[in-house]
Image (cartoon, rainbow, N blue to C red):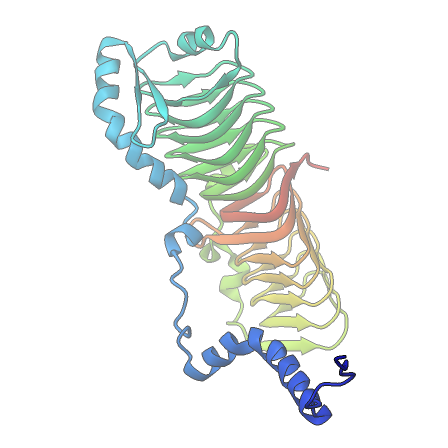
Length: 370
């Protein structure tokens, strides 16, 4: 009879087994780190990223891209205008388009009786007035003035003249006007809105990113077109040049009418009284409050929130990490000195004028004058 072996001929050395286990665990731990270790040693990926600056910095980037398509359609569009005809076709990317040589509104009304969504690119060779309540799923290009109907939704608009959106309209991606872009009350303007001359928004409008030589909130005022520049500020001309920067450990209150000959930085809250004049810039690590009629030649920076009172003049950027609110009559920047107002949330009263750009990373809103 055979005998059963209770143990193998050669027993495994416990020390070797333990060593193998430790090495295996170490290998499993180090393996995910090998690419980083190799890169740390060889530094093959140390070159800067190839960032497309035009995409990141130019608010008109998408409009410029679509203009190339519009230029290709121009010869056919001119033929339609000459004969007051309408033509249809397909772009190289497969999108359908319609060219309107005249009577564009009647054509669109007839074509959208059963479906309020227009799914083709639209190019109009003359002034274009659009019906109310339509949704345009593709881009619109207008050689003349474009007037959007109330409660309409637009993917993107390119206008060679003025663009006027009536009450309750929406822009999903971008819009650019070669002259003036105007939005009536309660329009939602997502993405990028730009104009070569001026943007006008009425109260109730919501925006994210806008850029133009002059942005007027609420109404167009003749005094707003006379941009305040530093040379027009008599107090600035009569006061000596800025005298450096002063740091304050805690909260700071600048008295009404006081002139600060340089920049100020506070580690706490900052309150600037009515009519004061700061020849430099202002930075606060707490809430920043600017009373009525204050002039700041430089920038306003806050690590939390900023509130700017009425009829102030701010020469440089207005930046806050949480939110910015600005009251009626305040001008930010000037025609010869464009600037930026940027924060996650921005609230602007009717009557505010910004020369340059607005960038609300979450939401910007135009509110009625209090």
